[in-house]
Length: 264
Ligand code: SF4
Image 1 (cartoon, protein in one colour):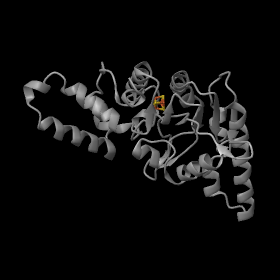
Image 2: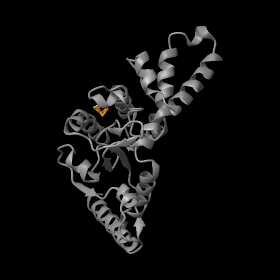
Image 3: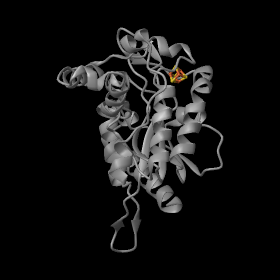
Image 4: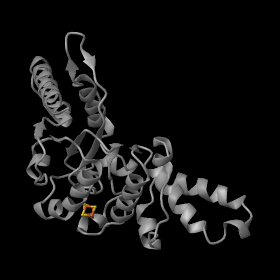
């Protein structure tokens, strides 16, 4: 099996989301995925799809929901990722589940060289079920691109694989109507930490980059090398003079690059 096969091949799911969970988890992306599956199923002869309809529906929805995660390295890893999704997508281990528009699990490569852990999903992430999107996510992309490790005078940029996630998978709303978020509580971070441990075991990073101090405070205990960098949101909200922000940005880039060059 090649990497592409592993990335799109998932096992049968033993438990489907309950009707209530499905309704709560719905958002535009999921509705679109659901519509596509319904269209597909409607043109297939009923006797041939009977019995596998629910499974096909779930696989299709999960594939549509997580195109942002590329799984490579064989069927066993693809199966473990699918089991991870199946377990954590409907998770209700803490009260944040009740108000989350979606459980935001991860984006990037599994396995990976580096795991980037932010604090929690914000409004855009909650709506689209994807970590590090929206204005801060765009800055994060820029930071990742500028901080790629360089080796030797030729400044060769090595491609490395990374995975992005947050300490919490569900948004800790400060004001649900205004869709503003607060810091995670200790209890919420503890409830969600088995998900991060599972992600680390699955993705096997060589190091963890905490994006922001809060993420570092709630990070799991591991033997992996870690670093904390300034959260891109700082550059959006900070009102310091422009030249100071540029210096802070450069410091952040160099700090991250130094860490990457050390661990990769
Ligand atoms: S934040 Fe984590 S522990 Fe809490 S409901 Fe969401 S996935 Fe579960």
